[in-house]
Length: 162
Image 1 (cartoon, rainbow, N blue to C red):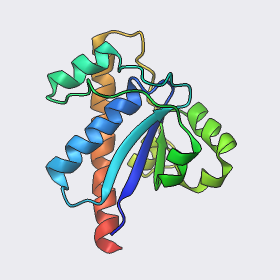
Image 2 (tube, rainbow, N blue to C red):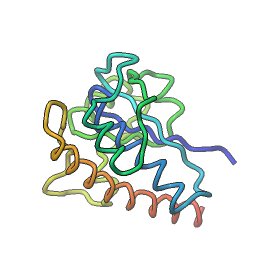
Image 3 (cartoon, helix red, strand yellow):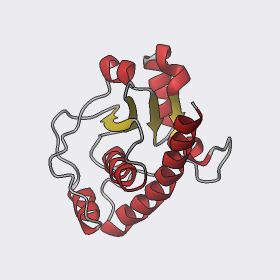
């Protein structure tokens, strides 16, 4: 069975998408180890090989997740092609991907709306914590954890039915 790749996309691939990727992998192993998905992350304006933001490292370490080996990568056509699902943090990133990779429009979604299975949501974007304090990162972590749990349950249901 072919393994599916979920690509989490933010701006620099040092905060939000890294946290989402790490949470997806951690929660998948905890709740759905047989789920046929792996997570990757990238940024639309990433500086290749940049380390994660120290606040992201600290925030996740506090929850027992190590992201110190992560290195930022730029979104590229190869990543887009191999991904089954691409989830962005903001509408700006969503629009960027749809404009620059039109062949992938059918698999690019706003993360919060996709995870919540809604068309509208009051706070439908994951705000950029870069340059903010650790409490802001903690809020982003909690928000992403809730959304990714919903995503995992949805994917598990689809895999069971399909």
